[in-house]
Image (cartoon, rainbow, N blue to C red; front, side):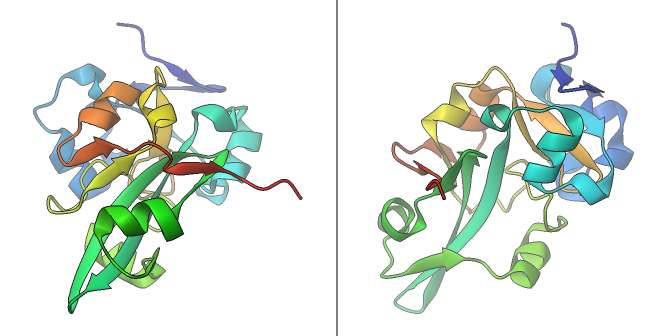
Length: 184
């Protein structure tokens, strides 16, 4: 299989470059087929989605963001990761709140997300997240031949087939998860 290209960046099978993977991401990929994920090194100053897409000629329509959301129910904290296209926002106040069965859901604070995932902020990816977290995947992400996602580090990106993301342990496709970003 030919390695996919991410915009102007060549990729290589992720496990050939463990230095470009956060520890939990590498552990999750160990033993998986080489075409499960590909990695590309980037300048960490361009890790945020808009800057990355502009700097490396990657269409936002193939870039997916992983956001970590939490809510409480009866004293229990319920956490989920949400995978949505960069052209959309996760519908936290409706879809995610109902899926978690909580009264209110919000983004997990940055320090808490980093500590809980073992990944860098701006590089969080669904691959290697805690096993008890559901990974909610928008159907548009699942349909991509390759989605560009974080690697757990700000200095690289992964290209992962949408069908791999949507069938990863704990993943579930959730209709209506990604909502269009309002035009300003």
